[in-house]
Length: 80
Image (cartoon, rainbow, N blue to C red):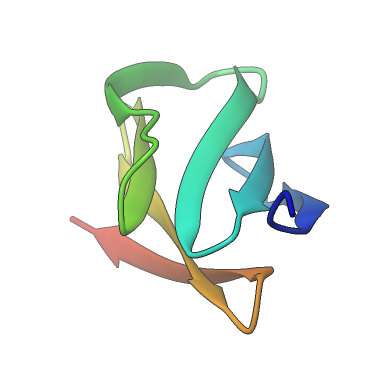
């Protein structure tokens, strides 16, 4: 039997991602920076976590996604 797949749109002022879980593995399907931001670093998975970091002149914002119960669960952190 195939593991369940769940997708989630996660939007912030710095950008957005579409994340999905394949069982316990997190994967970023797409990521788009907001106006004034750019992608600084990305680890799209599949892995126990997937993440993208958006950057602007004012600082950075990182979206990290893990899978909890097969559902994409984001953790958002700001730097600088």
